[in-house]
Length: 450
Image 1 (tube, one colour):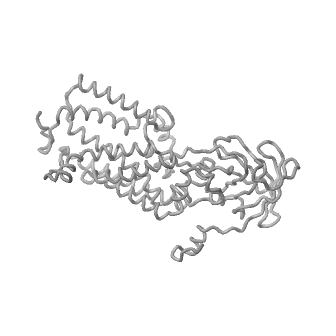
Image 2 (cartoon, one colour; image 1 turned 30 degrees about the horizontal axis):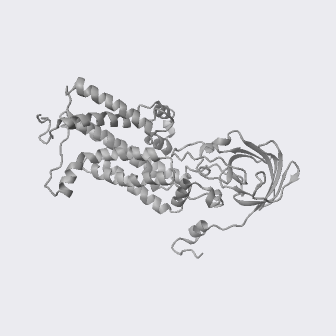
Image 3 (cartoon, helix red, strand yellow; image 1 turned 120 degrees about the horizontal axis):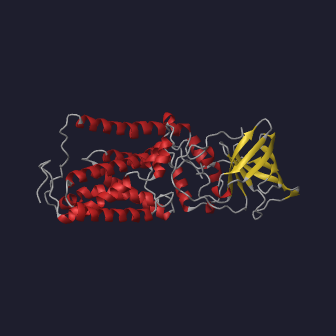
C-alpha cells in the first residue's frame, strides 16, 4: 500500500484497519448526523426572532431515536446493523474506489468532535449558571425524605451547592473548547470521557433518565481519543519515542482557509458567547426548571390545614385519610402543592428538556411523592383560583376554588374538588425558618449553628 500524497505525514493503512474504519465511519456518521424527523420538527418550530437558550439546548441535546421518543440501546443496534451492511457493501462492491482514508478519517473526526463539543457546551453553561439543578422549592423542603426518588435526591443535593454545580459546568466548558482545536481535541475528549463516565454511573445509581444519552456522548469521546490511543500507549506505557500524527488536508484554494476560519468563528460565537449570554440572561430572569408567573400576592409559604370539610362533613387532621389535606404550600410562582395520603403516580421522566410553557415545567414534581402539584390561575376580581394538576398521570384534573383572606396569615378556600365534591378548607400560615434561607441571609462565611 502506498501513502497518500496529500501530505508527507500521511500514515499507511493496513487492510484490517480499513475494514474497521468503514464500519466506524458509517456508524458514527449515522449517530451524529440528524436523520430523525423529530429534530427537524423542533428546528422549524423555533421562533428564530426570539431565540431562547432553551431552544439551543434542545437542539444540542439531539440523539437519533428511530424507535421511540427517546434514544434507546435498540436504536444503537439498528444503527450498528446498518453500519455493518454498509461496510460489507463498501468492502466487497465499492472496495477502495476513490477512498482516501486519511481525508475521510480527518473529516469524520471533525464532525464527531464538533458534535460532542456542542453537547458538552450546552450542559456546561446551564451548570455554570446553576439552572440545571436549582435550589429546592418550598414544596420540596416540606416533603418527607422518603417520598423522593433517588434521582430527585441527587438533584436536590446538587441544587443546594450552586458553586459546586458551577464548577462542574466550568469543567465541561473547558473540555468543550479543547474539542474545537485539532491539537487539543484528544485532551478535551479524555476529560469528557472521564467526566461523563461519572455522569453515566450516577444515572445508573440514581435512576436518572440520561443514561443512554451520557453513554452516547462517551462513545463519541472514546472515538476521538482512539485517534491517538496507540501513540499515547507507545509513549506513556512502553516509553518509546513517538511522533504525533500531523496529517491534515491541504487547503489549496484561496477561499478555503478564510471560509474555514469564518465557519469556526461563527460556531464559537454562537455556541459559546451567544449561548452563554442567553443562558446568563435566563438565569437572572428565573430558573427554567420552575415557572416564573407570579402566584397569589403575599401568599408564599407553608400552611397547615386547620379546618377541612367535604360535602359539609368535617374531617379532623389525619395522616391516613386520602381525602383530608394535611398542609398546603403556595410557591412564589403559580404553583400550589397539597399534601395528603392520596397516592401519587410518580412522574419519573428525568430527561432534560427546556420548555417555555409554564404548565410544562414539571421539575418541582418529578420524582416526588406525598404531594399533588397544581398550576393555578388567579381571578383576583372574583377571587377565584383555577387549579390544574401538573402531573401527566392526572391530566384533566381541575379544582375550582373561591378564596378569601380573613387575615394576612389565613386563607379560606371553598369550591369543587376533583371528584366534584364540595370542599372547604381553612389554611393558616406556619412561621417556619429554613436553613438554606438563613445561610443565604447571614452569609456562608459566618456558618450555621444547629
